[in-house]
Length: 70
Image (cartoon, rainbow, N blue to C red; front, side):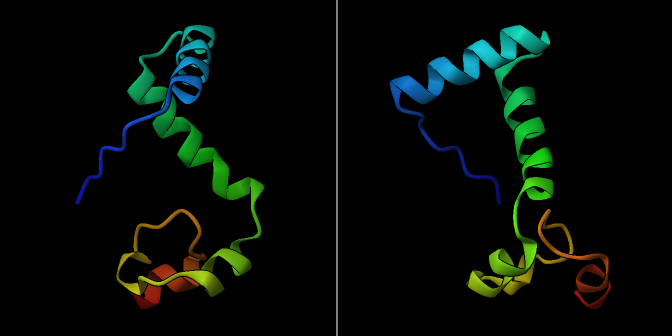
């Protein structure tokens, strides 16, 4: 299920400027940010705090072994 959050003015301005810098639409830029973010985070900590184990198969924070189990 897709979720379309509303951005506050500061976040929208930041996203818009990032999109201009990479030459992509804001939607593609936001998706790229979410694709890159897991590599910058502690995946184990994220998974330990997760309240929805139904999305492990496609979650960016799940390990490959987590995805195989899902």
